[in-house]
Length: 238
Ligand code: IPE
Ligand code: IPE
Ligand code: MG
Image 1 (cartoon, helix red, strand yellow):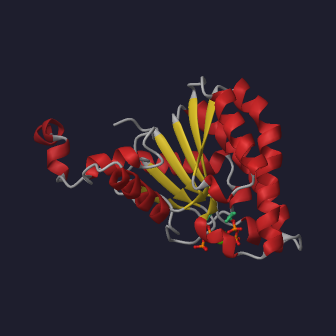
Image 2 (cartoon, helix red, strand yellow; image 1 turned 90 degrees about the vertical axis):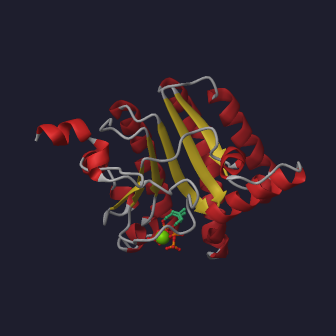
């Protein structure tokens, strides 16, 4: 098994607390979170990770105070206009995953443009889950299959899901100390290795990412098998 995960997924949690501890508005924490994300994309590409999927805004985050929600929408729009050149330079292909119907025309246009501009890049596939929920994804996949009159099987659902363009995440990281999945990749995380960090997302730097990758490298992924089945030759010799 390769020691570097092919696909890392991250619940970027803790921006609000980072800001509150500094007597700053929560949106300031989200801004700092964008800086951490920019660095994280670069580190992932440098480490040889091929797919990075991040949770940026959940289906449930609409329940936050209106000024925080509009701040996050604004931040998405600003990031879209600013970050594409760096993604291009680093060979990163960006894809937005989630329900776009609730987003403004302007933002939707920006998402499509960023995707089109970076579509040819192959060094790192970067998926940004925005207005995403794991339940939404399963339901929309099932609805699409039903509309086409196709049978609903594990394989057909898998292909209809919003992340069908990448393999399932190998490593799922959550920062911010909470140990829950919060409706992130419910289907795709079936066999992901889980890693929880107490660091708040704005503080999650290259060293923290390396610690998560090193922890992952120690795991034995059994996928239902026994330990002996995984390395029979090595075990016989021991
Ligand atoms: C995660 O940070 C970012 C989003 C949900 C958009 P939070 O804003 O949830 O930060 P905390 O958990 O309140 O500290
Ligand atoms: C999960 O974080 C969503 C994102 C990181 C975008 P939340 O902060 O919204 O999760 P809960 O509400 O604490 O479970
Ligand atoms: Mg949170």
